[in-house]
Image (cartoon, rainbow, N blue to C red; front, top):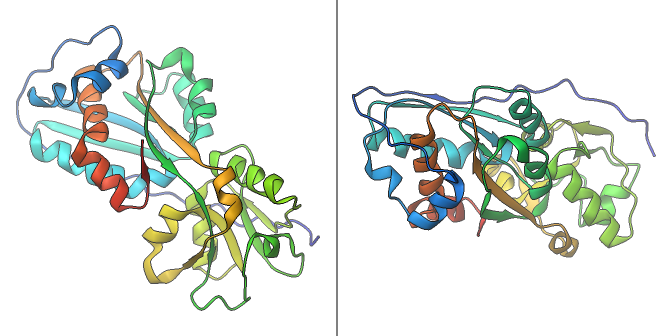
Length: 269
């Protein structure tokens, strides 16, 4: 196996979305997340204002930014701010008291680590892994076995983040030992290494390959079925804007929100 080299960290862009108008928020319920699941879009019918802060897995960046735009179009007095990154890092931030209202993780294990600061989580999507290669697949990668080839340059997510944990499961299912040259902090950084041509292949979510357009191409592999990630979302117990938090969860679970997710390649909850 070639020696591990670590690429320079790649900055994530967390879109800051803003709007302005007046409105009043509804009172919080004792179990905000389960209320969101059972009431459909009831919370979204109230006028909402102030700031809503959402911690979300990096793989949700494009879809949640779109949903944030929808929220602010409906509620001009509401500002939606996202912090996207590795779910494990975001969970630790939530536990440390970071000011946030909603947490959406890329697997249930990470959500469980934040259980003491989160309401009842609700599953809203599923995602699978796919091999990402540069356009034209210059290294001729055909399947997961090629990611165990020390002659190729391979990027994987760090094992402690959801996409890395899923990769471990996939390699175990295939009976393979990977030969990574770099472990990246999250799935977006792993994909960027592929897009920039820094590696021959990387293991990311299929939604990230789809979002890359013609800057990368994907290769499906059968062992991905052994490593499907379930995505949970929860209102944080110390949410400063619980009504807006419930409304956002409602939107994610609504038919409109589910369409945004499935159009991006997620499987519905």
